[in-house]
Structure formats: C-alpha cells, structure tokens
Length: 182
Image 1 (cartoon, rainbow, N blue to C red):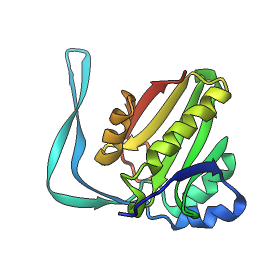
Image 2: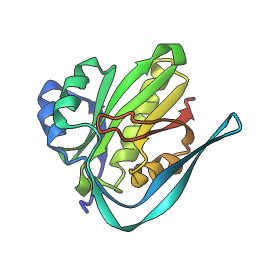
Image 3: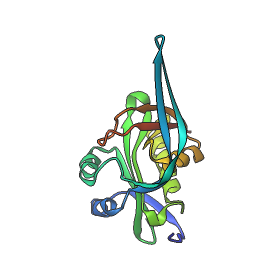
C-alpha cells in the first residue's frame, strides 16, 4: 500500500479525466451479498445475506471505461482525490432534486490507495457538497458482489435502503445505501 501523507479533494479538471479512466476500478472479494426472493400467498419476500465464496475472486467494475467517460458530462459534479500530486480516486455525483438527494454514482479508488483514507475523504467531500446544494440525503449504489464497498458504506454510517435487479450494464444487482446529510 502507498503511504499517504495527506489526501486533498478538489473538483475535477478536464485534464484529470484521462487519469481517472486509468485507475483500475476492479476489486477482489471473499464475500458477496446473496439475494433470495420468495413469493407465496400473495406476499413477496426479499432478503440479502453475506455469503463466503469458495475462493477469492476478482470482480470487474460494472461500468466500462467508455460508458464512464460518456456519463461524466452529465454529472452535477465530479471530485478527485489527490495524494502527493497523483490522482488516487474520484467521485462522480448526480443530483436528484425531487428526492433531495446527492447520488454517488461512482466512487473509485486506485488499488494502491485503498484503505488509506482516499475513499473516506471523497465521501466526506461529497457530503459537504450535498449540504452546500441543500440536499438532504446521500445515496450510494454498489454491486452485491462489492463486499468491500458494502463494508465501506456501513463503516461510514450508511444504511441499506433498497436494491434494483439488473441495474448495471452487466445485469448485476445494485444495492443502495443512504445517509442523512446535516
């Protein structure tokens, strides 16, 4: 892991975008959230449980570089994490005014900077941005396979608030975690 002195978060500039695309967003996991759905007697029951995988697996990010780059111009804001003059992560943010929510569409941190505070710094900056925009909620979407991100959300006080089956381009299930903004 890269030893970080300080992570600075700032708004993205056009010349930062190629560096953001160069970050490998894949991750390794030993666990997933497995969904179980039952329908009987007019009642539908859906539950998620943590399941240990038989072996560690590498998981690709649910959006490819081309679709990421295509979505960025529509973002309400995009922030980067900078450590020692190197871009180590980014956050792509949407604003959903009817729900008064800041939607964290993408939170990506370079493998060398994971667990060193870059993701936390980005999440905190997104929250401050949302407060400045007078939003009430911060919502983050993650794959059921992204157990590290699920743990990250829970560690930061975010609560599971829903899911969408076949949400991503690769047909993975999206989990939604929310947090009130103050």
